[in-house]
Length: 216
Image (cartoon, rainbow, N blue to C red; front, top):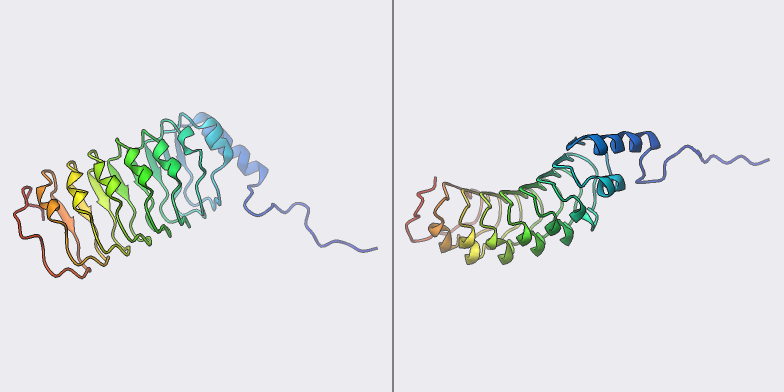
């Protein structure tokens, strides 16, 4: 008689044990803030998207997420989303359907570009995308007038569009450790800008105009 060495109790790759699914489901049903940092999650539980329309904050730092689902818009009341330190290579266009989003942190992933759909997030105040592999900042995102903090340090950005002058609510721009050779002149027109951090680039000069906000 031949015996199989296959463990029938072993979970298929990417699937959560039943007891963990039940725990997460209980949290989704009874909480508005989910603390799911360091859970080794490889994907978002479908229960979150099916029953989580009331969730306001979700913390997913240092998991193993490689992608996000296309039906993120079902998280209708989500305002804070922290995805720092995962394995994401891209953000789905559906991120633009999370219309209440105010804070998005996707730092320390492997993202190569920011989706144009982010321009639909008119309430977004803080966008953190540090230490990814981003090469440019989409012109469409320069319409985010509620954005006050933009953190793009540690990427491969070679150019910022002149349209960045449309970020009229911007107070802090952090773009250290990129490949910029110059800064757009329109930065000087931003009325709220008080902080620019752009060290460790390849800047040859700064805009030859006076900044209206006198940033440091």
